[in-house]
Image 1 (cartoon, rainbow, N blue to C red):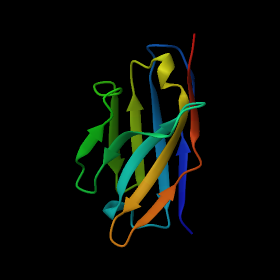
Image 2 (cartoon, rainbow, N blue to C red):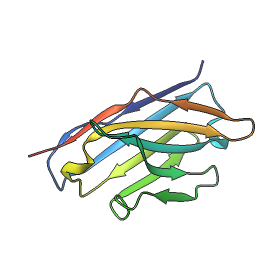
Image 3 (spheres, rainbow, N blue to C red):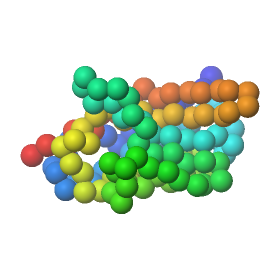
Image 4 (cartoon, rainbow, N blue to C red):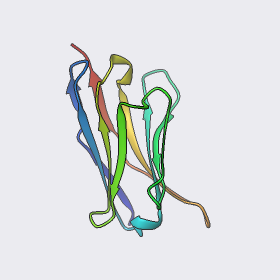
Length: 117
């Protein structure tokens, strides 16, 4: 059974930092592209950051220079380091694992991040 379990969300003041973790089980983690998405109330889910199996990374323009995605294949875990947080970063953050051929895609349950003073 495939599981993606996020942790590390919470309430933080503007300008603060959080590190999200997503622990995967039931998949060959190292071959999967891993992504972090977020969904704010009343908005569509958006891609925040992406790391390939070869550790190439891409970011949404809104988080470039503030967020860093990384992975530890030995721990089957992907991380999202979030610095200089803004109120507009408030959302539920979801972990996603994708293997393209054949297409296999899995989602975590989400973790709430709230940026507020």
